Length: 268
Image (tube, rainbow, N blue to C red; front, side, top):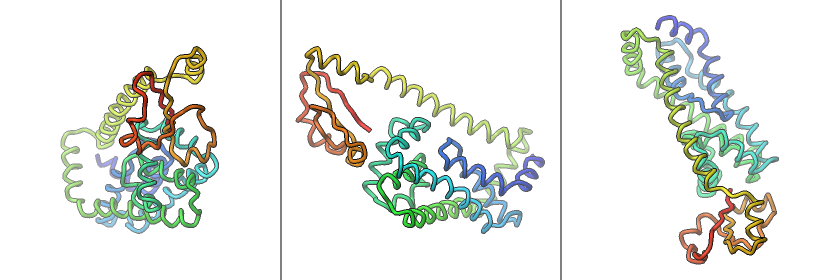
């Protein structure tokens, strides 16, 4: 336990930078425990709260800017890439698009507080054509607010965090083993959920070639084009004969969908 604490104190800023950067780059790493720990240690004078905040900012912004620029130039292809590596692939694009459209530019300020949203809203801002200066202002404000909150919570609850560390020390198990075990268990649970989702998706999916063969054979099918307007504008392609619905209109327009044939959904 003592060796782990000494290591964290010697390399704390470097650990904070690496964890925040990797998380904002899109990998499933949790930086909040590190922010809480650094905040707690800053209350005892072992770290500088201001320097820790700057480190978190400098780690977050480069990754955010890179995703923003890829969103500007690659569009929805970037979102699909992010959602393939996401732990929540079933709702990733849909949720991020809906939230961004509902709350607009202010989404960037609060996105990092919503699991899975922080890394997705940055390319979404680029896709929506947000100006770079405005993006930097809002994203920087959001990153500063996010890092300040969790560092501050570490300061406020430092005694409780010390109690947890003391309990871990008395068990004879290293703190690193506990953290790694907890994170591994969480990622394993999410991975199993992802595998179940992908299995269900594979069973329900139809390829464009198979759909075309069914249409050529005279089989009646209904195609629903549920892509968002922003993706249609970026792509420009239309599906011949498809019914065009915005996803949010399904509840009010579902009676327009024929019920006497198979329904094929084409969505984001």
